[in-house]
Length: 292
Image (tube, rainbow, N blue to C red; front, side, top):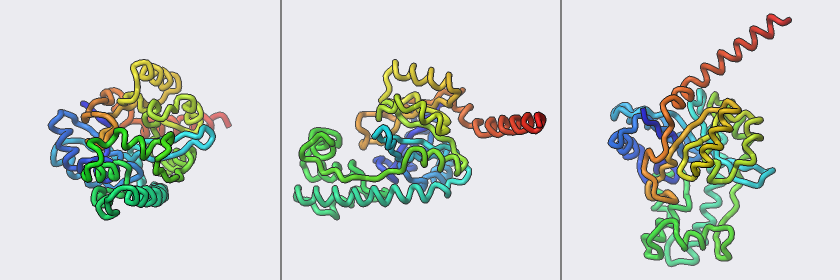
């Protein structure tokens, strides 16, 4: 059973809707996907309903934005199978508000630099819970200032190294808080694409914070990095997952759904992880009681 456990829709910074994503999965022979929109849980219920119609299993998920203040790096944590996803709503709302503020600042800067209106830019974020960089770039594409989302203009506007960048600071919650919130909601915390944000040196710290798994198979990871991450997971008894990080045309490179998948045996381990953990806790409690 093929499983792509990292997919985005129009609810965040993907270019396709939920039903379109599910149809692509079905026609691609992918039986299982996880809709993991950024800091947004809104697509889970609708996704599961539509998934049943097309025979595609939808695993509840969300990609939560975080920051490692010690390392000074962005970190993304995937949450799967939360028993009480409503407990994550506060965290998602806080990040959404911070992202909205930054998005508005960047939008105003673009509207002052190019002959486009803020309404024109906002129209490209229709259906999304927020305004992302891809929406701004799409507006500039439609206005004729570029023919690609991620090109020289994107670098000029959104690279921290660019003297002409329009970046606005966004405050994200600390990675420790995010992992704690995921566990508080009864979810499974998986480190997303460590190669993308170069989070390798911090993995041991995240494991000590309770990390449950690592996204080993991702378009940003080389074969050597996949081997390294697999070894780390094996040594620390962590879950291994894989996903394409599908964004449609809003992706930083050409990626089709299913480019990276979670193998069957690892999908089974993910699905049975919480039950296994509960059994282990009960055994530990019995042993502790017997020792008294």
